[in-house]
Length: 425
Ligand SMILES: Cc1ncc(COP(=O)(O)O)c(C=O)c1O
Image (cartoon, rainbow, N blue to C red; front, side, top):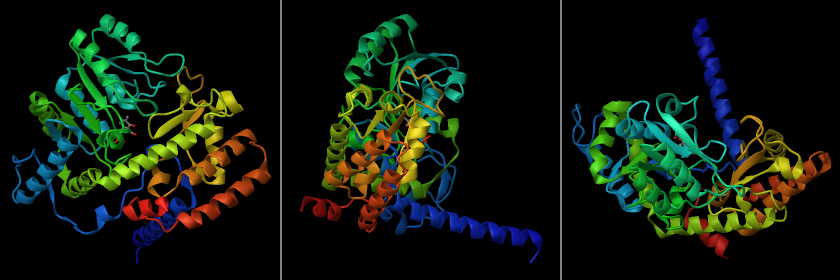
């Protein structure tokens, strides 16, 4: 065996070890990272579709042998349209960043004005941050939130009338409240702007009627199935009929070339599941668990940005309440086995790698079968530790408690009706 082969063997060994360690870690920690969701293995196991990769749009591919490919993609798009009451779906984007890129490319020219939510208020990188392609190629202007952390539609209207954007963007990474698409549509109409909603986070809530419906108010919606929909990662664009050609061409050949059929197949299976009654039960449980978090955290006025949450996520101002910066709170919780992420808050005073708070959500724990009582236990452990960040004994005890609790949860697969039945007993 030559030196390079030996080196590759060593790397292969390390790779497998790292994957095994991550697998174990997934079951040894309580994952409250808001967009994290475990994807059911059932989407990955049965059909391999090894060779299915093709370019081009549905029914128009410069590739032979795409008959089944077309059928699978058509079904994925049909289900997506049905779930969201959309006219048209493009399920090809590899990610939501890429989906957003395609939407901007389809409807804007470089330098056009876009009005979007500020990053600190909850907006996403691809909504105009100057270090992202969006902020580099388009002229983004921003709206924030009011002093309580809520979207202020009157303020948006004022800014829109002044700026006259060609597009308005809503949807966010860390906004814990509902979005009133009707109001945004009225504003967009007044200034003749397209309305794009990036609904990566609440997609699962929308298909179960627990979040306002984006259509017919938005012109375009983007989302990924891998957050509250419990599906595989990827990007989907939904739009009104009259924009479908522009959007499709912006995806291909605009921003991407080939499409892996396997992901589209998994996506279609997942979206079909999202229309089933079991998924509705999952979302109901998720929202119940979030209400438990809300109740526990409300014991500290000012801790939750906006005072609570209507969704699967919330943001805690740990700096104001406990004197802990976001990175410190994140690390403290990580050390006892609870995963969250540091989070910038409205009017943030620190950079994004420090931040004033943390973001957390209940998607992962609900999908793993956590009941309201389990969620209460987790909330109490979080609060006790944030209140006493230097209490090493408490940290040790909390870690043990969580580890015992997780050993019971370990057997559960991702959400299914069996988990639901167990919780109902
Ligand atoms: C609102 C929002 N948009 C876009 C994205 C980017 O998605 P992707 O990672 O698929 O590019 C995210 C990612 O978390 C998000 O929260």
